[in-house]
Length: 260
Image (cartoon, helix red, strand yellow):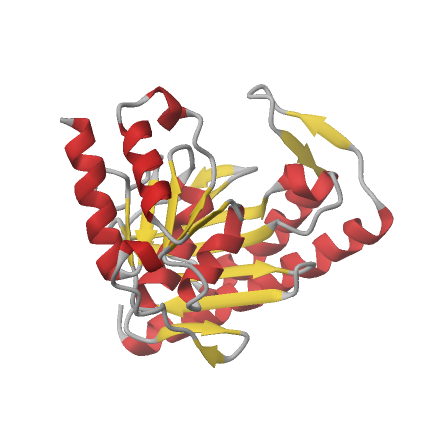
């Protein structure tokens, strides 16, 4: 994409996130019934209405792009594909905690090139596009310069699969060697990483719709964002190792060593 077209797409993604935020705040204020999907995850009218609002904006702005959404699946294809999770963190939403967000990313030929992460009740929005930097509510965001593991702050998210893995012990060693361990989860620890508040994020059970936008944000803030094997993100990505460059490299070497 040309820089001008990328900026146009980013503006559309931000507009779509704002439209979703209006829907989500309305349901947050008045409450909403919860249904359960076949995979035992919750869904609400807020999820569905927010995705419809997002799709309407994105389809007008970039009609040639396909859209892959959490609630309504995939439509269209080609070189450009929007990835949409209208309400990532529905479990938090229904339990009245503010750790949920709208995630919108655009992939070009399989590579995430822009992302918007909007947490309307938490009160924070981040966005980024390839070559345009990462931004937190209009201010430039940069990762920390942490180089030593003993000074690093680590946050973990979903780790169910990793508990069955040989790398579980390697994670324990990382925790022992680091300065502190936290479990912010969802969008929150990626925002903290991108703005210098954390140094490493580890998750073994995610979906690409949850993290594609956040990957662009972290990378444009100067960080590294891969799966736990060090691989690039794809539509099949299910794990994350994201961090400031030096700490990511050290963590990846330890995890790879444990997997041998």
